[in-house]
Image (cartoon, rainbow, N blue to C red):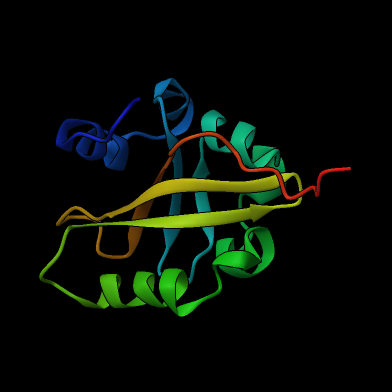
Length: 134
């Protein structure tokens, strides 16, 4: 199973455009308000939402409303306000209509990007079906 490494996270927080697509995990770059600035191919594939549909929209309210919780959006706001952390990892379960996908999430901020943050997302295990057995 793939895991995040400090090199990957540092690299992801500095890449833009097509270079993000080479990464083996999802990357969503957002500004302080949650507006999506960058969105890579891995994340597009996992969420089944095209880049064109998400750029310029609010991640927490328009694209992934299941993250509009204290455990995700609230944590993100606290992370951006804090000057103590540049990386914050946690686990989250995305409740897609086709099943639940457990993921490892890491917020990344570099010293020169206080007005934005990178949300890195890596699948953890297989998706669990929400369908009940027949």
